[in-house]
Image (tube, rainbow, N blue to C red; front, side, top):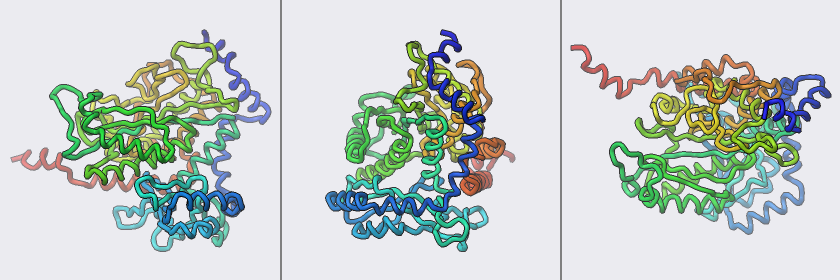
Length: 491
């Protein structure tokens, strides 16, 4: 089947072309211009507050909390550095918090990180607070302590601040992903679904694997058995929190990967953040260590977090599939989406591989980490692997990724690819080299206007400041490798 025939069989492509003609402009450009405009709504806080105080909403939430037996609530927000911050409030005050929210110092979302000169990134003592308004539908009881629950919040500028009062807080990465995804739905009629593959390394005397020189410990039943108490408890807690757990395996020394069913990116990102908290709790219970460090050991596979993506239309059809085509393929709309991802891949590495340690994955040959912006059909060496019809596996994100930032950038990259009909090279063709250090990733990010314009100014500036400081600290550190290499190198 030729590309022309495949395109003719894709009704959503024709729908997009008609929409662009009706609008009288390119959909990609229209999408980009809408990203920043969504931040200018001074009535956003009031609208959220009004929804929170709806009689049915208040009654439903308070009844759920009372039925659960939760006595305390964590009011939570994700940080730019992929951590989670929260305040604990007795559950009896939930109605008050639905109205007034929870106040945080705004540098909480930049991890309260000081730069190399001792200055708080994102604002010092003079920085204003922000308000986190809870989202009632996100309440869940923690399965390891039924007296504690959690609820996600959305961040806003306090209403009393002149000019910006009531607007969404630009540094809230979770809210930014939700806005960009809504724009993808509004402009292109597409919903992004994602399934992540979080790998992580466990360490402890009770779970030491059996290692044979020259052999990988991957898939060995004995190693799974050693981890049996761990993965059973993980699955128990995840299932209690609404995950549909589907499979898991042992991949390298101490490394396991547990997967759950794909879903809209809002749910998938929240579940990934929750999964990390589950792992930390299980590690405490068993007296072992659990780490999402991207590359703990040389010679072993790093901890990746592949994102398996698809775009679905309003009729519930996967637009990455061409009707009637059974061989492994990617639809025309899907190829354009991949074209956008590959175009912006170097700049997106600052988010996908966000730490100094992340780049050690790409320097260790033979460990299945891609080094170029390319795509292939069931090719594990490619950055984007088409492993099954209807699914594009982006293989560069690692276990330390902020899933809200990664998915928001992938939404924006695909919007560019589809809006501007960016056709990628043939599968298996060589692509441009990806950054091989955090320093190179910072420069690639700064050179990509599209990626920068699809992040709010404050978020982009603070994120680059955080990563630039991390790179500066690393460059100024004296490592064990340097000591061994140079201590007595010259007599």
